[in-house]
Length: 485
Image 1: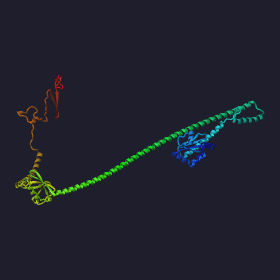
Image 2 (image 1 turned 180 degrees about the vertical axis):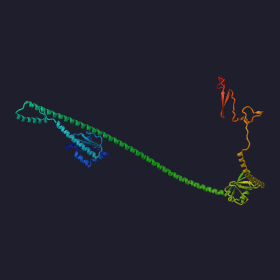
Image 3 (image 1 turned 120 degrees about the vertical axis):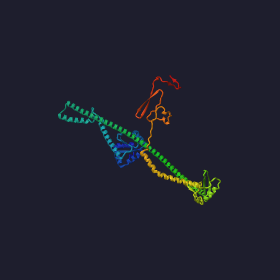
Image 4 (image 1 turned 45 degrees about the vertical axis):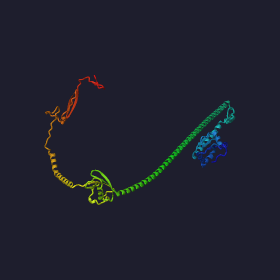
């Protein structure tokens, strides 16, 4: 891009001399300015600007920018002004735009400026004052000259004209002059109207530019606010992630410590269990070496003796006989659970062989005599005979029961109805069953001052009281149990 090297006045004079647009670009330091700087260096944009514009570049906040801003207010940076030959901005390009759009706007502004220049030239030519003779302008002079030249041959040919013909010619010339003046006045009014339209268009363009700048500013503010919210959200998410990470680390550390602690505790428990098991085994072995025997005597008392596991059953019985306790003359030892009676053949076995270690409970039972054995044998024989008799009589009992069920017992029970009132005849006192009433009788109770009526409906009897209303003024009672009349 070929920027103009001189100052603003020289650039203005150059644009007017070459009938080009005066392009002023205000450069900033933001991203849009960088994009516009790259855009100006494109070949197509540079060619259009070189052909139709005199371009000058002003830096923001510079002295030349300040002088330019006094004449043309700058609201946004970067901005491009396309100014015509009359000093009025034809187009204002705010912000960053595309190459195609800027070329279209430069071409449109150049055409508009050319039309305006042509119109202004024609207006100046029509409205330029000229020296008149007898009220005629310079443009009317050719008409008078032509009319005089036409008159001279006519006079020479006709030999002279009358005053009437001269007056007619003067009136005709005057009408033409008036028509010409009206046409000029109309053209002037049309030019003024066009200038007013252009002025309004420029005002509208300026207002649109301001609105656009306001929209751009609002969009930037919204974008900045959105970015701020996004940054806050990212910061909050970062804090949350950090908190979650710290929590996860703490949980992992806690679980690790817990697992280590549980492993140590489990190991310690296993060691304690092993020690307890070892001790219990040792104690079990020690207990198995000694047998603790509890003797239950026939009269209910009991005592305990300790014997080595190698002690014989006969030795234990001999020791039991030497104890200062009352024992039967002849006795035997019996184990309750499981049921077992030790015989004399087992007196030569030790306690371990008889499974009496480490502890056992033995009952001291007196030996049965010969009479008891005989009675026991006789009772067993009698029970066997009774059982056989029951088996033999069982069919007879079954047949008797069936006979009674089919034909009955042959006896009838006669019942007499009990009296309902008074005492039984014969002067006998009534039995306890006399106070009971059968299903066909009705029990009544006399109530003073009332009578009863009995109504029967099938097998049901209903009792109803008929109160006497002889006393029309019944007595009333107060809270002190005194009658009030």
